[in-house]
Image (cartoon, rainbow over all chains, first blue to last red; front, side, top):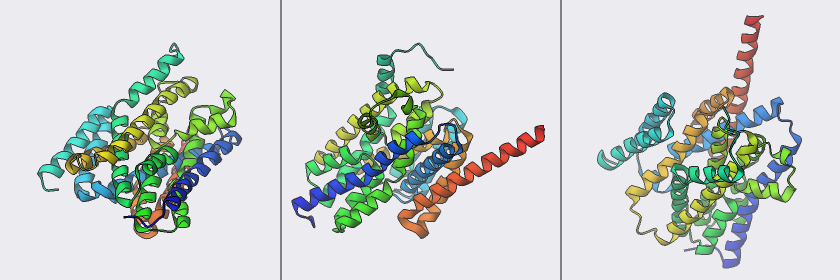
Length: 112
Length: 245
């Protein structure tokens, strides 16, 4: 089911592209003008890290779609196991397997 | 610490191989998830493919499909996607700095083209790999990595459209869980203390802000988290240098 005609549908796709492209384009233009060692780039970097962490935590805490069918405490448990493993072992694959394994066991076997 | 003996082709290959691993499969599955949502929302095949290829930023894509499903106005779609993907600007500035893009004297269209492939995964990956490669090497590594991730994303999207009924949700939800976890692991292991601080503060604030601010929460948590990290770091540094003096 759809609310839009074919032309409107494609106009929506074009607008979604434009809504992303403007930021990438502005970023490329601004990157030329910002000095590499100054405090401004440090701040931009920090805000970028902070935003990305924020977006990812939102996906974990308030997910939509199929991930939304799982329980918050199961997701947070998997996340915690992964974080502890990465900080202790510094090995990505161990941490990923630990996080995913914990999550999979809880979701599929201990009531999801 | 940097291995300077590697040739361009070798570096591109390293990028490609690193992508044909956890990040590629995780991102491909996330795009499968997107295609499933978008198909339900009423997108046809080419619209789904065009959205992944041209937007190439998952939070914006998901916001787009969710609004499309409700029949929202085109203006609202534009504003919401723009808001969801605003962080692209900061990621591009930061990514261009990590890669020392200005030193390569590339024409504008080449820089824009290169940065089109910069999304969260490849940005977090080059930040993480800074310790292994110098900026000149990192550009080639990034080329291989980001293109391969893009290929995985497209394959995942196509697979999601055609096989949406065949993939068991019990399996899909575990695979989709990997992407946020993987990205969070990369950013928490960033080389700079200030970035790690920003990750902890922004990541903790955002879900709380979401309850009051909705989609503005990412921007608010990002600005506050980043600024607080910067302030804490410089304050600590100043105190430390005063102690020495």
